[in-house]
Image (tube, rainbow, N blue to C red; front, side, top):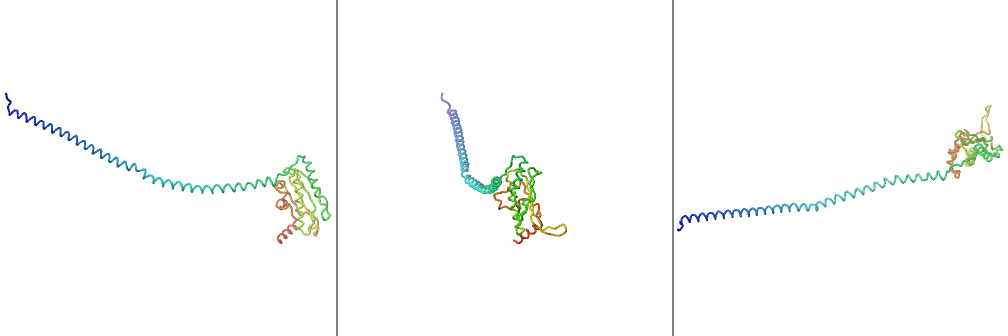
Length: 277
């Protein structure tokens, strides 16, 4: 039995139509997949380009930063150190050097040039006798006016500050003028003080009084020339210990001892002689 030609054509047409439809769908699916691949590739290229563009400036950044850091660090550090060095040098050196230089001569002068005066272990009464013997020896004999050098015997007593206190009065040698007589008295007192204070005894102080001829007023109103106290001095141990006795000729002892008495006529004559010079 042969098939019906019309039915067979219909069936063939449906098959062909289904085949075409399937092919269209396959091609559409393939096209969509291909399009998706192309889009993905394009996106990937765009992302890589952006990453490359952003990465390149970032990598080059140190090169741009390096010049900025170099000039900033170099000028800031170098001037700071250079400016500090001169400031420290002048501040430290002047403050210390003069201080050390000024203290060394003081210690040398006090220890080497003016040593402590010696003392004795003898009993005080024995020391008094030894000191009085020195006075009697130095003030023995007579003045140039044939007066005993010692006006009165010297005296040794206990000082209130401790040690021995010696007092004496002597007749001096008369010179042509009062300034010359005063100069003689200064030398005589200076050498006697030296002999007593350097003898090595516990001597605290010494008083010396010089008697010379001077104008005096009598009890009945008259005036005349007669021996009288004209100059009196005192020297204490604390001052004697500061004296450079080896250099005594160059010292003015009127600035060292205490002047207890200076006759008025002598004072006027000494002032006049100083003003005349």
